[in-house]
Length: 253
Image (tube, rainbow, N blue to C red; front, side, top):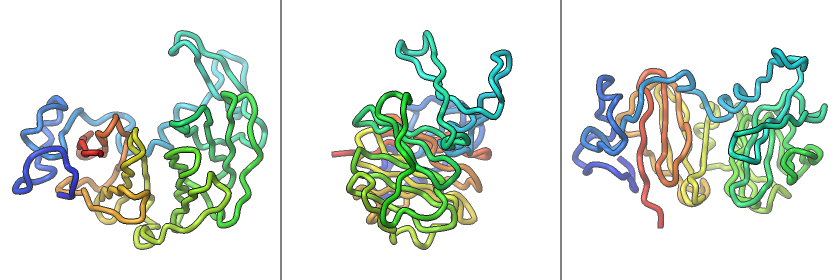
């Protein structure tokens, strides 16, 4: 296993759980450094971007809205009531929402080539970003804060900005896996970045320097699909159709 694991000792496998153990509780760390926490779900194996896109796929049934129109649903009272905000025409076909955890800004990717943001709860949106180095077809935007962000691209090396999107540079540390349909997420603190892809089988890498260097945390999780699902504080959840959902907690200074 890699450094920072939150489970059993180094002499035991990282991913020793078998399918019959998938109903165990999260705090049961006896079988694996990665702890199985649930059975296979309908969203297992899908990236956060795909899940969000599914949630935004408004059919308009019973509302009179066109199935081809895309809306943001928002609530200011923890889901008791919701309001609809239609996305502007240039963002129709949006691939999902991404929130900046340090501000009220939200971001969207539309059409694979446009990144836009809103600072007023989706009431208005910026034009598509134009910046040096920001090229290619975009799959996912990963936001640490208002200055540090990563763009995963289809079939090309991911890009990173450290100046709020004014300029972008290739992440050469990921050149060898750039074509592996990568998925990435920051922990809640922004101190740990997790990335996954499939190269024969699922791999999980973790970085503590925004992707300059990586530690392989794949262990014995032997799925052939799936990847990073989400974080809860410093606990990383991964999922696949074959292995279900598993978690690992990382120490953060």
